[in-house]
Image (cartoon, rainbow, N blue to C red; front, side):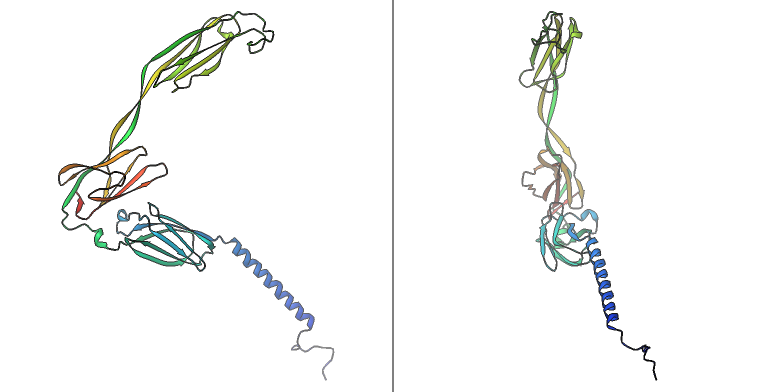
Length: 341
């Protein structure tokens, strides 16, 4: 007969034990959920897709930027779209951001190139997308071009400022006063307010179109230590000079001197030489460049080809891109029937 005071090993747990097991499981689940949530919070989401689009080419020098391509990013919940700039750069902002590993589909469209579309896990990286021209034959030069372009150089104008010394200006003036007379609080007075003082000033004018340079003022006679220059407008490149002197002793004499310069603006013609790779030509011009044109030999004849604001050349298609400092980057590609010698 079994002892009623002992429990069988297979007996079900008491209700208290069951409650304890359930409570422990709930706490464990809450801890795991909190840890998982903390990890998600610490995971930096992908909010921007950045990259550049270039033309497909075996040689890196042939992989020219593709401007004005339409770039689209599609996620499970949203679509973003932008257009590449003159350097082929694009940047798409994802809203809402994606967790790393989430799928995003990118597509690239341009009327002159084959469309490209692919899906990939979202991640922080620089995308370099190479797209192929729709008609690869257009990218190749004819076997026997009709025209040869050689000795290519770029001509442009700039404004040049030349400063010429056209003379000098000299002016002396006196500050008349009698020393050792108490000021008695009747200005002008000495800096310490003790002695009666006198103030005198002089103004010089360089004349129309001229400016002063290397100006200086000096005390040349009298009790100079008891005088001072109160106003000294002697900065370079100004048309007028103004000097004011305070004197609290006997009369002093001052001298103002300056060089007179004239700035002349003239037009200068400069040349630069483009870099040529295959059928492509690239060159840059400084911000102040004006009236660019291409000087070249076509079939042995020297010809000047003005670019004009629309960048029209009979033998090449050109585009221009502006950098932040307004430097201009020109890219030109030969038309069919032409080749660089």
